Length: 217
Image (cartoon, rainbow, N blue to C red):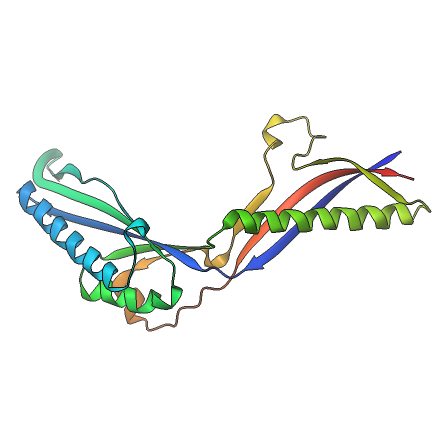
């Protein structure tokens, strides 16, 4: 005799770090001039980041990408020059510096657009905490159900993060997720700073689901 139960949980955590993505690009008929422009702003960006004590390990840059740019004139491609692009990702571990850093980047005219994503330092620990609470939820549900039938809950027979009673194999993925309204923000940097709105990180939610079989006494 056994009971098959699903347990779920969702917890809220306050994000404590942010990933900032910047795109540095320039167009010019002279590819060397476009590269020089991007290199100059890259140097300015690194100097700005160092002024906020952001370590090198928290700065990742891609290699330069050079692509031809065309205009269409009477249905024909006419070369306009070259576009040089580099993407930079910065991990900001002190969210109190968000406002001043954004303002500094705007003042330095490093990039016109930014994309940010809020996160927690140890997402695995948060996910595991939600998983444990999901197991607690499963046990509480099972105990209530068997008590209503005058029985007692026995030992655990099996625990799984997969719904093994589904026949479709594509359901066999761990049901864990970290998400939230505050998880991502994308905006034009100039508009973002001119708005003057205070920055609030909000919360990120972590959820988990488990499937447990308990024996019934």
